[in-house]
Amino acid sequence: MKKIYMDHMAVNPLHPEVLDAMLPYLKENYGNPMSLYEYGIKAREAVENARALTADLINAQAKEIIFTASGAESNNFALKGIAFALQNKGKHIIVSKVEHHSILNSARFLEKQGFAVTYLPVDNDGLVNPEAVKKAITDETILISIIHASPEIGTIQPIAEIGRIAKEHKIMFHTDGVASVGNIPVDVQSLNVDLMTFTAHQFYGPKGAAALYVKQGTRIVPLIYGGIQEGGRRAGTENVPAIVGMGKAAEITRKDLQKRIDHITPLRDEIISSALKLDKVILTGHAEKRLPGHASFVVEYIEGEAMLMMLAIKGIFSASGSACSSKALKSSPVLISIGIPVHLAQGSVVFSIGEGTTQEDINFFKETFPAVISRLREISPYSEGWENTEDSTCTVKK
Amino acid sequence: MYSEKVMDHFTNPRNVGVMDDADGIGEEGNPVCGDAMKIFIKVKDDVITDIKFQTFGCASAIAVSSMVTEVAKGMTIDEAMKVTKQSLADALDGLPPQKMHCSNLGADALHKAIKDYRNKQGK
Image 1: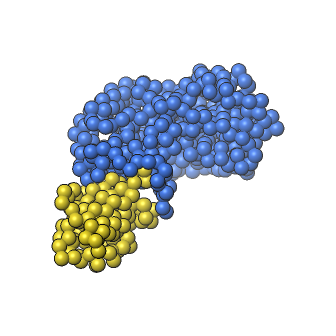
Image 2: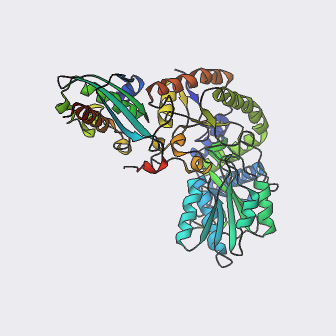
Image 3: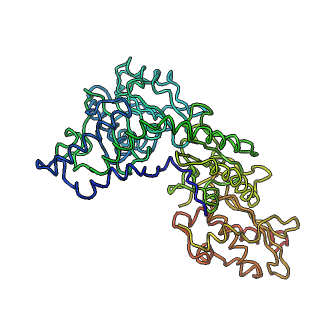
């Protein structure tokens, strides 16, 4: 059976050239970059070369890149590292309601440590209003963190504009670029950011390789104490093969990005236009200001996990923000934040394509998706319309 | 994460549909919670002679719904009142722990349909 991977927001496949670049560092070049003899020197050179390539992808300097093990780590590092570094200046942080859990849960942790956090709402397209950011700023504000692009609804935020506001007020500005870096051109200079999270597996690099861009001269407190790796800001023996892979993936992405965008955008548009022809299917996120490979919907009268499972049986792999598809059994807070009622959020489905996606894949999708929807609607008691959807009546039993 | 039996009942659910002349109807759950089920029964001489369901929910919710109709068909209503969440999960070779309660509505919906039937009979 044909398998069509439409979940690139979860992870991208490893680029074959990236694997080739990594292999020597899993085999003969196994040295610890801290060692002073030739094995160590070779590993150190590989790490520093990867740092320069990774920096180039976002128009930063090599010394502004701190390698970490995940996007979640980088997000934790940015929030806690800046909060603790600047707590004598003030204890107020601004984030949006559509951040990744690694930002939201770090913010909640900081609230318990005595920081105040403003969670900015978004409009129905998922956009943060830069004016609302400006209004939320107080004398106590030390950090603003707004996600660059949403992996759930694809919406791309006006980061450059928010960055300009942060700069005017001399407040540190972080963006979570996990879903954007590698999918759209990202330049930390024109975006006016002081810190940015990004991860290699979003641009055909390996898992376990991520980075935090920290603008030169920014004070940040480490999350992980130990040795002097990463300039003393992130201790622990470097994951050399993963870092090498991230550098190689960044190098290829810098070269291929426009080609990838040109390939996936019309295919993505075809997914959206075909799905919106179906009855009671709604696009989530912004129609234009969205990631090029990203198509997300809510489908009325059926549930997302069942949709995802039935699509998977047919060979199409996708994602959902429905309560039943999450281990925590909670609907995606992002969908609720853009004003989707809870019963509609249950019908969430997300398709994210990549450079390997073909026209043939999209043709198969266009046949299969409507068939899956009608099959599940045949089983559903609501195919004639909703009933019993008062939001107050649900208590989740665990 | 799902057993083969769950996947079988999800992909080929038994007894899907509505019944215009049902003797009892049971509803359980709510779309806000993510799972909701309707069950229709036909009863003759205290035996469930026909049964249909409609379900909004995840794969396991649909599989449990299908299984409860298969199990209950031919049972007396007293026997059917003894069908439990656990017995349905067991019949499906188990459910993932987080799905055990939220999507396991089949027994409750069946019991409600039987109560509806008894109310209508004035029993």
